[in-house]
View 1 (cartoon, rainbow, N blue to C red):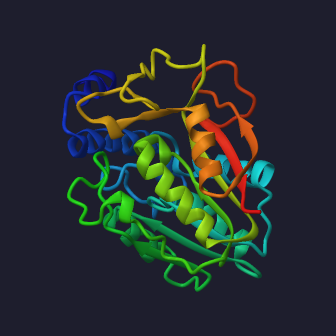
View 2 (view 1 turned 90 degrees about the horizontal axis):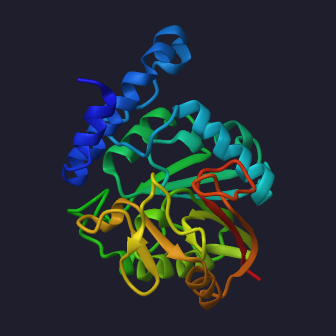
Length: 274
């Protein structure tokens, strides 16, 4: 059966099955690179924990470039990776931070964290934590409510936090909680980079992302499974940023909808703790 047909049929499956099928297709596309390059044979399999389409190395490198170019990543930063998945950004950050910085990644996927701990076991500057937080798309059996989430970092201990394709799977109340936690863990002057679908007039839906109204601040592509992909009104996101005590420093429009002004797929925010 052609991958396009499989992907279309998977759209009707529950989240766990849908993501496993999509991950298997990603793994299938990765086989030539895995077979030709021995260094890539240890990459995690996406069918176990699927964090999105795309080449593990290429996507990780792109996200690292975005942190360098748009979030001021420095070699001595103490970095918090919110939703680290199976480590595609961690793999890029490890050599950058190994001499002077530090890294802590956490995720709601037990499989993703297990893969990261195995991969980085011999690198003491790389630490990982599992939080069993509920999410309708990624962890429907999670025991911790999103609004009770506490990041595994001390107050004012982080220079740079980032969340890539996290708020695109969370309702607005949960986004507010994560913004408040980011404020708590950031040191004064610390930065928080995150991506979102920031909906604006004339920039509200595409064929690939047919967002339809979900509530007063947000729209979704699938009313059955809202966390599959959620867009939030830009004004609501910026109100939540201010409410958390953070200052929006940079906003960049992503490739998901024209016009765009940077090479990331989703819209990009850099916010700062005063």
